Length: 299
Image (cartoon, rainbow, N blue to C red; front, side):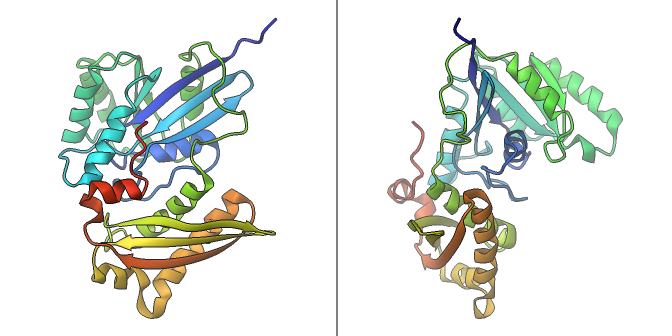
């Protein structure tokens, strides 16, 4: 008798910085989606794959949906987030406690067109000072949208996440697994290396260098027991290059050290990382430049 297997796609959506990537990393038990306190840290759609016995959940982590389309990069991120709502079996709509914004409102409007069930995830409840404000907030939302389930949780410390996973399993359709059981993401190691460098820049220089940089991997080669990685960091102005390099090169060394440690942990090998910084003005508002840098993965 053939074993019955379950497999389905679950999209995690929400405005920037509500904790979508933190939830994905928590569920997978390892880091595949970069995080920082800065909005719009996630720029690409990333699949996180969790397989346990006969159940495979394919989580779709998306860039935060935000109002206004702005430059070409912002347009790309919004298109990517919108695309995640098509052809999934379940949508997880994440909000930050009772902080309701215009961006949350815009996402709720988009969800009216979704054909699959939607769960409301109220994240960071451990930081909620007025717990009594939660019930009226949830009641007001329930009057405007029929959520299949509502989960107050903490993606950071894991509160209520196991219960959420159990409910998700019950929503999955029967079908063959789409990925190997030991695969945790659809992204390449090369892509992950670039993301780790970008994360460390965002964490160290988020205020001085908000969104005007990207990372391109020029070399990714295993030689013996050492992985050699060369990364080119693109910024838009000379002043940003100076900030990134820092006094006597100290900032770029610090970023490189943190990124190398993250890579060694994920790739389980010694890493030799070289970083360069180059000015490429206007890259974030140039469709051709964005495609050459890998911002074209909506298929």
